[in-house]
Length: 163
View (cartoon, rainbow, N blue to C red):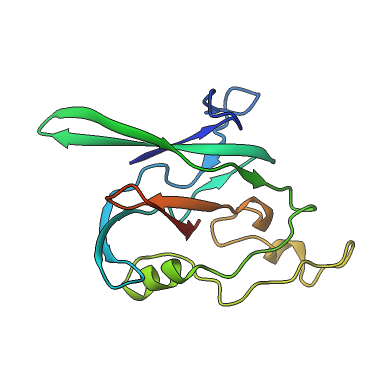
């Protein structure tokens, strides 16, 4: 599965920033099929993007394209679009939400994915609870650029996973 950043209307791909050099997304834009159990205990096939981030604030969609590799040939299968989501600057970021039940379940099954135990309250303007140097995630992206990315199971039903 390959993820592409799209404009709000889902009509234009946004692969690079305005300088035409830097990519609009960081992290892995490709995910392999993971066989995991869903929240009802049923076996499922999921594509999870645990470290995907968008570099610029704005309103976007993600396009997920499924390809099948057979031998040395690649076949396009289908594309689906996510719902609209907002990426905030670090100053405007309202705070992280608690991870979904499905995200926690995936982590319990051994998937390497960050799990948030509880929702963090937004800080009052001008107040820093920690120095700037430690306000970055382990992957060096500002906390304001983390997004929730939908994953799709084999039946093409959306299930939200935290990115």
